[in-house]
Amino acid sequence: MKTLRTAEIGSRVKVVRLHGEGAVKRRMMDMGITKGAEITVRKVAPLGDPVEITVRGYELSVRKADAEMVEVE
Image 1: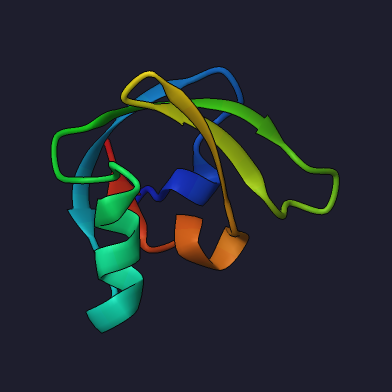
Image 2: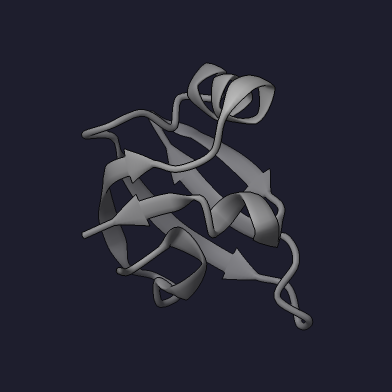
């Protein structure tokens, strides 16, 4: 399973599934990270947290733990 956290810098990926439950999953969906959304990985901090992405035309930073919940292809 490939996750957003393991995606290469500069790569463009498509969301397959969101793992997680409740408020965490809802927060991710509210940020625009939904099934079928295309995401570009912009930067990753030196220690891997946070991951900077572009989704639906805006830039967003997500924590490493949250990025692991996003399954991509």
